[in-house]
Length: 249
Image 1: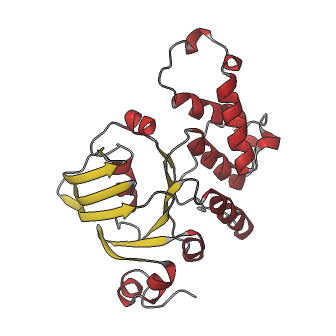
Image 2 (image 1 turned 90 degrees about the horizontal axis):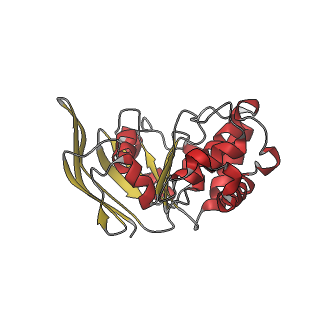
Image 3 (image 1 turned 180 degrees about the vertical axis):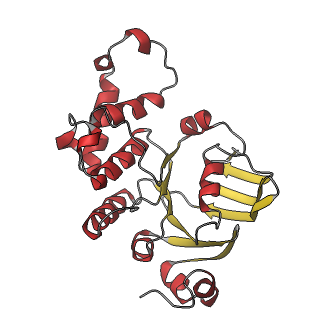
């Protein structure tokens, strides 16, 4: 087991956001978090990436309790994240966006101020390999702002992969994508299965069902159901809490 979350409680002011949340993820698994807006999914990602610290409970990653660990240390431990809203450097080239992410994973930034980027051939090689993986190698020199929204989502995935993570957190990777772009993203994430451990937040039911090994359903800060996609489809409590009583087709 690469991630073991035990009894997490989190408060915002007087608001009790997460209620005794527990969740585990095996290495190489793709786990989806399903739930309405406000269920606590993004708060959970913020805890995993060090942007928030839990009020109580443990977050054990690869045998180490990382609860409250600062964000800059989380990346070095092997956790990377994409965001619901595309977060890139629009004026930089596609390659430079990914190169920077690969560089940030280095143990030290010493020498950056007086050393050209082409003085890091291993990083350039890593960046190009990741762009090849997501299908953007042919546009490496293009400015990030010049590509489509769907390609920018692919670029953001490449930025996350550049850090060579052991745990990849994807926050609505299909957000804002057309049907064709969504299918392309689904196919891309499927190519990552088995090579990366992935936790996925996604509201598109068909995407969740087609990409996930297992689904955890969150409702008002707690996990109310866990299981394989077919089990979640049949779960009456999930249908009441999330699907309005109607099972997905």
